[in-house]
Length: 303
Image (tube, rainbow, N blue to C red; front, side, top):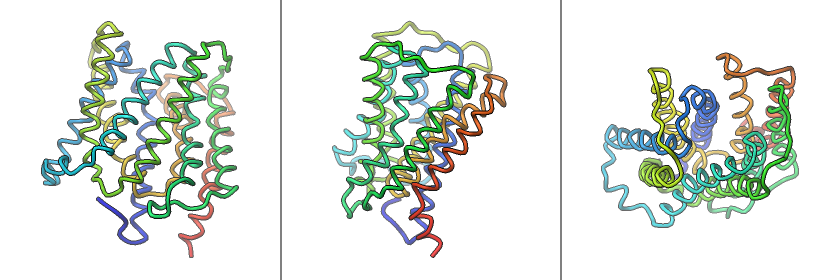
């Protein structure tokens, strides 16, 4: 998987990115069902399983381990910066500030993806940022920000300033990592296997230094933990890599706002959460934002 092969290739990659978004919508439900495993420990376990997903893919496709030797050092550094850096900073944020408020701030990353996409050179697929891209991204963010209220809760920024700054940094790290991945479109997505392994090691170190080990208890918690590693923390990162490197960046950026909305709907369906009428307004705002941000892309596709 390297480069574009005709007009259909970007849309196939975009669908891969949509697959990642759909898988991330299961993160809250699986995280809830996984019990009381500490965050760094859960991250280490999940990324260890994600590494096995990549190993299985390399073996199944017969790509050979030599592909890792050809990956530029800058690509490795970017991967560690994105996967490990994001999780470390995000976990710091939720230790210092309420998780709901942290999530809202951290979820500025789709908006930043849309904005940062305008900085890409033309050789990497960069195009001029227009007003409807920004309006669409802001509309999508408004939909995501409604989710806490749709769940019957509220927002009260009562945490540490450092916690909120860490959440903002998390948004910057993930968005910049995602957009910068475009500069390494020639690097096979299978290389994410190595990044997942390094992230697993880094999270394990964080767990040893900061947490007390708590293992999943019972079949349900173990199953949820395994599914986390195979899905939203496994296959999802490979799909996202393909989407960012070869798909429609701005469309994927705004569609990412569907994650908290879909996550809430899934929690409600599983009886793990509640939601009011505002959830449907959130859905409408996310869909409207996606259509606005991707208007030119969709129109070009229809010609």
